[in-house]
Length: 459
Image 1 (cartoon, helix red, strand yellow):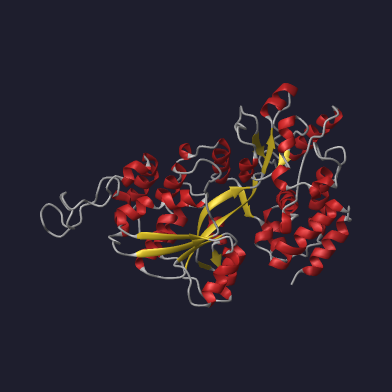
Image 2 (image 1 turned 120 degrees about the vertical axis):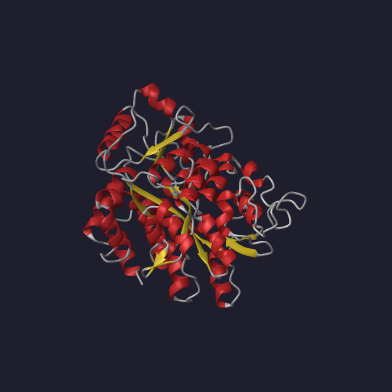
């Protein structure tokens, strides 16, 4: 759908600023071409400056594309703003609707015959349900697939595929394999960023030997209490068992109480259930279960804790005025693997699925998989957003953590895997996995009993 020339233009032009794209992308009536013809009157459309990369979508004047997502105010505005170049250069209108009840309401709307044209799907498991149970999703058209093949790694395309058919292009992404810390505290103590798992344990021992608690954590999250502990196990599974076994685990090709899962849980326990390591600023091991995840890393600011494992989106939880960066109050380093060369990466993201096959819907879906959109979105977002689209100009990302996230996502040697609990059946991934990891912390439930209970709950 895009020529290579246009692709190269997109990767560069996306960074020129929304001002260029918004500067009268559709010709005015009193300009040459303003009536839909060029200056020679031969009926050809003149392309306005800044709209060259959008010419491939054609003239979509008078059409409307409806979009349904779980992203609500105020986080929705950067998304709405990022569509303006597409709207102004093609003439299409995008009607955005965000809902906190998205996951429950989207299947209802699909069953009722009233689906949106497009939806942002935050869990590949939900995409699978919509495809297999409702046969409601339109396979991705050629323009979408060509963009994804060029600008994303194969694993991202796989997460948007069901039973060998590609349906949904990746959109935003988040990186979960991060450890937050204070650069000033590390520098003052002479500590270096660990590059292997063992170096991280050695650092933890050194901090504990000085009488401090190296780690702080919180897994409280209302009805979803326990999910941060599942992220810990997923991250460690990637490091101790490897990505292939991780895939077998989440697909239940090996049982949840397999010895390889038990090994990973024991490795997590060597940190989270070690009274010498936790829970700086809060209390003993059991306090992790009663500490809200939003507060879990805050003792770093008071010097009561040194490290906190949490995703890139945690940057939104630091108090106003906290400087986030390599020379700031807090920053994050990559949660290391077994060796410095191992690059397992845990994360999540959204996928754009279509429920209609009209030309304007296909065009907008292709736009959302392009560098034009990625760069437009980066320009209007202050922090807390990144994408795995390698056509993104990273200089447009304003947050150092977002820049680091993109660097990790774009690393060709990184073994990216999606959050396993988002891929498991909901009875496990949003049920027993959460509750049993909470019991593991709160009541010191033995490892084997925790894993046996989760295995017994698998549908």
